[in-house]
Length: 247
Image 1 (tube, rainbow, N blue to C red):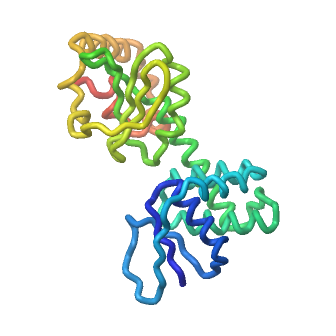
Image 2: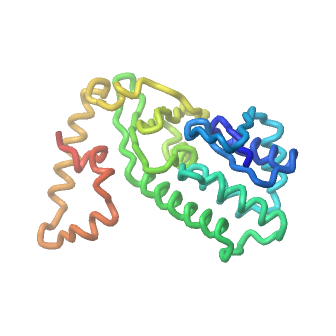
C-alpha cells in the first residue's frame, strides 16, 4: 500500500490524483496530513501541491461536469475517507465514460454527499443574519456542518451588492469578505467574532428588538407545529437567528 499524504486543500487533492496516474499507482490511498496515523505496512509519499498538475486533472475531467460537481462537493463534505471514494469514482468514470452509474458504490456515495452539501448550502443561505458593525461593515457568523462557504459567496455577492460584508465560519476559522467589487477569503479573530455584541453598531440592538417583536406578534400560538418547525429550522442554527436569540 502506498499512501499519498497531501495538505488537505482541493488543489492538493487533485495533485495527488495526478500523481496516482503519473506513477501508475494501483494499491494507493490519499490521506490529508491532518488525518495521518502511523502505518508500518505502508509506504508514505508526500504530495507537494502543484497548481499546474491540479489544473490538468480538473481540465481532464471537463467532459464530466456532473462528476466534477460531485467531487468538489464531496471534498467540501469533509467526510473521513472521502478521498477513497473520489479516487474510485474518477477511475471508474475515466474507464467507462459513465458518470451517472449510481449502481457503482463510489458514484452513489458522491451523489449522496452532494445532496447533503446542497441542503446545507440552501439552509445556510436562508439562515445567515447580518449585523452592522461600528465601521458599517455587515457581519454574519456561521457554523455549518459542512464547508459550504465557497458555495454561498456568489449568492450573497449578488443579493447584497451594495453593502460591504463579512460572512465568517467560526468552525473552520475563515470567512469571505466583499468590498463592493469582489469577494475574497480572509482570516480574522474568531474569538472576537463569537461575541458580536462588542463590535456591532449601537442602532443594531434596536433593529434586533423590532425584529423580535415582529416575529412574536405575527406568530399564532394555536397553529404552531414544533416538529415541522424543527425540521425546517434545526436548533443548531438558532443561536445566530435574531428571532431565536433575544438576549
